[in-house]
Amino acid sequence: MQKKVLVTGASGGIGRRVVEVLSSEYLVLAQYRTHADRVPVGENVVPLYGDFSDPMGVEAFWKEVKKFGTLYGVVHCAGVAKSGLFSDFSDREIEDLTFRDLTAPMLLTKRLIPGMVERKSGSIVLVSSIWGVCGGSLEVAYSAAKGGLISFCKALAKELGPSGVRVNCVAPGFIETEMTAMYSAADKAAFCDGLALGRPGTPDDVAGMIKFLLSDESSYVTAQVLGVDGGY
Image (tube, rainbow, N blue to C red):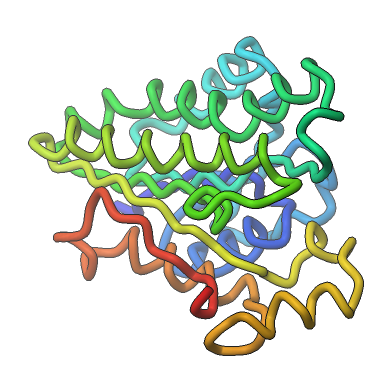
């Protein structure tokens, strides 16, 4: 029987490529909220609308997902980013970013866990960020939410390990996507000058790591934060 995997944020730069790569081996449920036209198409891809802006949206999405039965894996790519001085953020902006980037993945994962535990197998991959590891100036709220994903990963991996379910984080650095297109060429060059590899990454770089974490090749890998950052 073909394994089923859920990928959130399937219309984003990283999520879209993850869906494309995984659909060669899995049936992929591809969640999107906007830009439905950017979600990959194919016989192994099932686009599913989902709004993760509040708990009701997460629950509504879960009701659609569970129609497909127990999933083997989930890749949490969905999220938002907003830069600026932390003191300039409104309370609502902080609350919204934190919910979308941290709380929503936690709520959705909670609903997926029982099926994986019952089958004694599964792989959960959380897409954090280099800023979740190091923290970034003008990225305070984002860094806090992505850092929370890392702690969630490490704790949940210990809780689920005895049941054969693995939990890992991928922490991308500067990846060329629509989200990073806002930065000027000078800003990109300045950032990449500080990298061991001296260049930005691509969605392929991240998708390859995620494919590995879902596969049996990583069967002894859990509670890890794997940087895809060019040597930051």
